[in-house]
Amino acid sequence: MSFQIPRGTQDILPGEVEKWQYIENTARDLCSRYQYKEIRTPIFEHTELFSRGVGESTDIVQKEMYTFQDRKGRSITLRPEGTASTVRSFVEKKLYANPSQPTKLYYIGPMFRYERPQTGRFRQFVQFGIEALGSNDPAIDAEVISLAMNLYGTLGLKSLKLVINSLGDTASRTAHREALIAHFEPRINEFCSDCQNRLQQNPLRILDCKIDRDHELMSSAPSILEFLNEESKTYFEKVQQYLTANGISFEVDQNLVRGLDYYNHTAFEIMSDAKGFGAITTLCGGGRYNGLSQEIGGPETPGIGFALSIERLLSALEAEGVELPISSAIDCYIVTMGDQAKDRAVSLLYDMRNAGFKAEKDYEDKKMKAQFKAADRHNAKFVAVLGDDELEKNVIAVKNMDTGEQEEIGIDRLISYLKQNSK
Image 1 (spheres, rainbow, N blue to C red):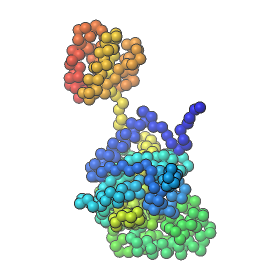
Image 2: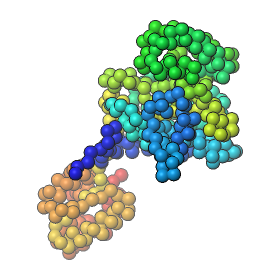
Image 3: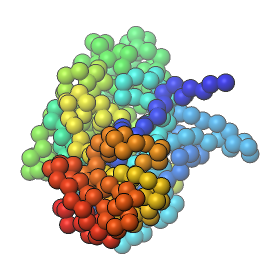
Image 4: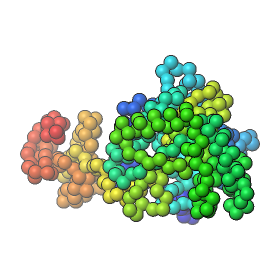
């Protein structure tokens, strides 16, 4: 019997996985500079966490979750996103009691959604996301957006568009909700069944519908910006002020929504304008959620965050032709001739690795010429040639593969030689 990988998943093999490692290390380094600390949560949680934390009216909860019953009949779900789990841990572990606030967290890990697989979109995918919990300062909104833009810029992406909007505070959203219901209700039967269900549940989600996006009522729908009270307007203006001060360009899009009931104030998306990237251009989405902690049993806590897919980031890099600075070169390859030399190479290799060098040797009894070819495939900076004759004299021949220069040194000097000449 032969087995194939499940649809919507992928094997990330050597040669490709190094790109993932580079991106993840870049993200971790950036988070360290912004003072975000890593959090690791379970891959599965109780289903109710996502029902409440993501929202009953969302496509994620209604159509895309991998949900099953464990052996005791409890409903368990593979996490479809990272925010709900992060906030659950924040509440359960009482991180809100720490004297230093806001609590700034980031995560990198696999998520699971039963979606139609397509370029850059998988059923198991890896998200990088951050959450800042405990501050109502619009400066933290600008910081979160700036971190996302900084990551893309650091990795070399240039064809980016940042789109922002305000969803206002609770009072503003309530007024907007009533206006949306009045706008769509007379002709709601012309919309898809999802939109009909959302009319009373969460009419803001209608504006995010992919099926009815060209319906004439979409373009004439009342804008949330028309319903912002003075407090919400001032908040949104401050976010824009801070982004401008950071030199970050953006567009205000009144149709950009984050459809969950507890989202408010800032919402944003980062898109790729690169040619050939595909029809779905969104790279990253985020926003402020000031009611999520209470929704899952915690204290009133403001929060803001974003999440991005590593797969889509890689697709954007490919579309722009960006080559990540990844080197597979090793420091030294040992070429051996003779049984005693092969034996000595084992401990020599061990010593080099312990000294911090990337080193390798032949394990297939190849001829000398084939061993040199193997050294080339490893992009070895140096090749150390050891035969039984050299071993008798306690010397080893070292060749610099860049310059072609070769010299004979004492075996016990090999590590110090590499340290001196690898700079």
